[in-house]
Length: 557
Image (cartoon, rainbow, N blue to C red):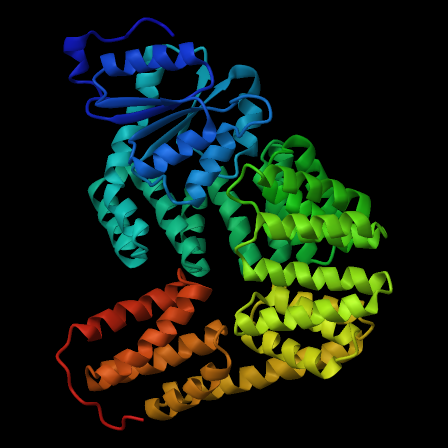
């Protein structure tokens, strides 16, 4: 470190005055030197951490204003990237907090490229006190401006956050681009892709900014304009082959376009540059498995399991997918070993127990141990009943496949119908159902089954929406309530049930019986897609009605 830039008298005017700071670095001398410098510049408090988990624990407890984190924290240990990703995932770093990554000059380009979440800035070792203060000063004013937005986003009050963005744009036009970036982030978070696209188009008309181009590609993806998405991500990679998130999204896009081999190739390139990202290893494992490249799948899932040992992103599916790879490679010994490992590592999860039991059944079936296979299926049924059917679509599909393989087709088809009806608008789930039918040698039957099931639920929804548009709200409520009772996980049906009830409340005034009904649908939708903008707008109207005095509506059903 260079000598202190300011003396103690000047330090009272420093941008660091009254700031709470934490330093994360594995070298004690560097931590202590930097700590003394920051305290000399007026910082309110400066904590230090040598190790990632200690740092994450402290930051989750203390609302630090500034986090200074070294990228490299030692071999085979969590690095700065993993710390930042975990804190971002846990929403412990808001718009008003500052995270600055410290890195060596020879690794800066690589570090900046592989970051899936981008920090507020970088400092390259060796740096002077002046470099540090100027970096913080450049970021501080903007961070303070975003504090109200940060608070609103923290409480998931996205409508207030958007209002705060609009007020800031009027008061501080020089920060227009920064505010538009935050505003578009909120639109993306709440699945309002049309509004997000309008913001990105506005920005790109004036400036060619990478974040706007990248996120425009994501909008194309989510709105199923896959060719535009492919072209956008390819261009970004051509211009900067270290921009790793573009590889991830290009791979996802190619897979949607049916080019699984191309998707695998792109992910292999990305992993060769950034091998420590668990999501990337998981994605490569999954697409390699679909391509029947079981050697690559094995390598990737093994890496995902290893990375998960020290990551908040650890998932049981890494173990179970690796077990499936071993089954395909006729290595049932390793497969059964992994099943025991996943049971031990996720012992408090019935979902994981169900997952492990299903795969165990497949292993026994593959090795002609039919009595053990039947025992596993019976155990899976028992766990399913305990969970009251509240399992992920993926698990329900696995159980359906097991039923059909074991000669209980009627049970399997009934469960698949439930999955399709609850997820008829989710293309990833529908594609997984079709893949399952193909794997069972029932491709044609699967196409007809999915088409008929989707048509049934779409017909119900269209009829209900027509009743709402005609103002026949009690009739719409009755229809959607009946449908939603059998489809607790269908986002669209439950959203429209809530929409019909809120519409009736707005028309006729507050009625606590209707408000009580709303709570059920709000709870369900919070479990499915809590950030959806249409849902948030209904919540806003619901809260408005709750503030009204009670009155009995006409035509209550």
